[in-house]
Length: 328
Image (tube, rainbow, N blue to C red; front, side):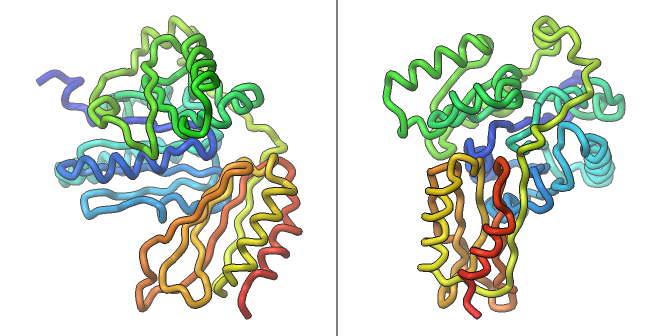
């Protein structure tokens, strides 16, 4: 067995805010029942909810990183977590078989990928298998125009999955595909409706080529700086009181109409008065949906937590409006 084949494969799952990364990750976790997967979750902001949106079986373990962006301020934490996982696996070889890293939607994947080549302890134990990028077909053009991170996510991809392709016409989809091919001719492009993608084409594909990346970006191994747009902010609204359903739905209708263009991403777990199941809210700009989640356990605190990410959002007003939707 070669040294490379003994290494633990790592998949970096990236894509801009709201593209559908968590949906795809859920698909992976459901599909590969025979493998133990260690998932490293990174969210932009003070607190995350994605771990609550994942389908977690006994063979998976979720590690959250939400004290900063994985590509800059917490990259040292990534190295530490990978080191801790290595120690755990050396004590118990069956602890996990692979690692999936889901980056925040505002992450530049380059510094994350760089970790697997410039950190000796990481490089000796882990193999970067591929970078899989999810692209939101509905909002991709605007995101690629406005955000360097979205461009980097496409440029570094070994596989590109198009989500929400059903929301655009064939001509618009063709234009987007042409643009993505011009940006990255190496990566195959496929549609993925609600994360439905061939797992065999996403894992164990040995798609990441350092030589190819160095040809495109000769300074890849020396880059370690990355800054975010200061106008992008995130905040969390939490409450142990239940929401009134009608009032919260009216709040979202109003918020989408007034600041929808600046609402880059909003998501959360909500407890409604009189409802025994949690409700999962997810949205991006003007598009929003909600689904029933699992029922609250008898001894579980029925707490709501909503995360908002956007440009120059009226945080105080949004929090006040949300508080007005609570049942006393």
